[in-house]
Length: 205
Image 1 (cartoon, rainbow, N blue to C red):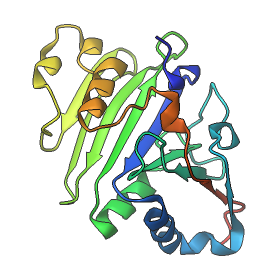
Image 2: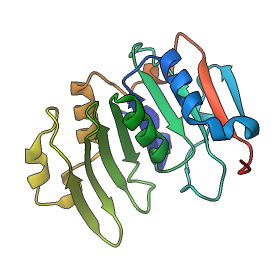
Image 3: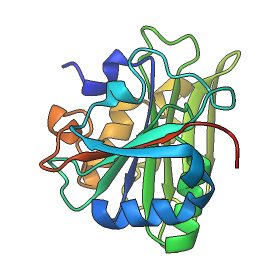
């Protein structure tokens, strides 16, 4: 089965535990420094407008932009996709800390085309705790975990002899399924409402 995100070498996605209209207002409140040098647009959900596949490059050199939308198969949640490999994690961190609502972030790799695969699930809870688990390749496969184990996790996975089998796309998808999300399905990337596009136009404050 081909997953929706397999066309990307590296795919960052966050699911915010809050309705789209609320998240829009909250992000606008956080991003006050963007106001004079940014734009917001509304339209059909199209990830290519943020970053076409297959490459998403690391942040720092290019201006950030992101899309939020209400997934067709998860109408009470807000999906967040950016043009940064870290999924604009610093922005998600501020949102979680300020509004004390859960954010579930994943980083998925298509290992057939990725030079440095990375598989991660990061949960920022409504109690402002953070759980991070990942496997990735630097010079070799490495495994890392920190924070309180979440109910959806199967810690037996992390005992696998082969490090790359301790967390991979399939395991992340199983975790997300337990949380009620099917990000591999096309309906997750469709919406009954318009998506909201944020783009920073310059670094000037």
